[in-house]
Amino acid sequence: MNDQIQALLDKQSIYEVLVRYCRGVDRCDEDLIRSAFHHDSYDDHGYWKGPGRELAPFLAGRLRSANSATTHSITNVLIELDGDLARSEAQVHATLIRRDSDPVEVDVVGARYLDRLSRRAAIWRIEHRTVVLDWQKTELWPDSAPPVPTEGFVRGARRPEDPSYTGAPRAGTGNHREGQRCGPEPP
Image (cartoon, rainbow, N blue to C red; front, side):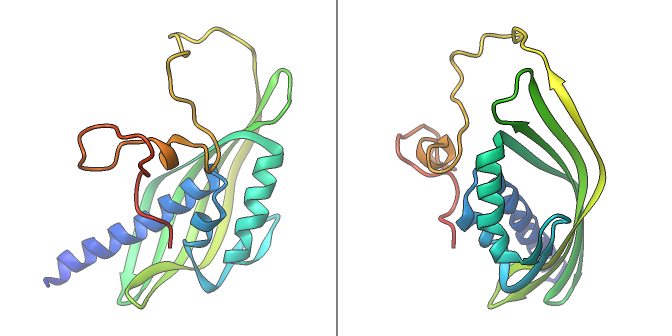
């Protein structure tokens, strides 16, 4: 295979590791979070430091108890390849809605994931992650009417109730089928 095509495939695989991690965090899916890290990985999350795979139960438990919903979105992803090793920097914008606050309190964070990744047995995963905090603020969201009716929307939830686990259409099917999972099974 052409080296340029292989580089694109590797970068896409690494990008999917990063977004799989974010999805796992927002769904409080410990298996999905864990799947982003090698067994001997390390994560420095500022307030938590330790083996990457051990971050999963800590983070999912903390978010379940402290937040009613979260969104972690990555942008400006830069990936540098060096054979079976890679470094990436991804900006992350996190919104964390605090549970049981009135008015609603929301933590909004701008940070970066600085990752060293490696491909082992043909699978890319994180070896070392440092979360760099660039800024943070807390907002109060007053109760107000939304600009459009929201009653008909399918609502997001944590695993296993979220529609991405139970009812989202599968890629390529062209239609919605109840009980189908969106995306591959977690490793």
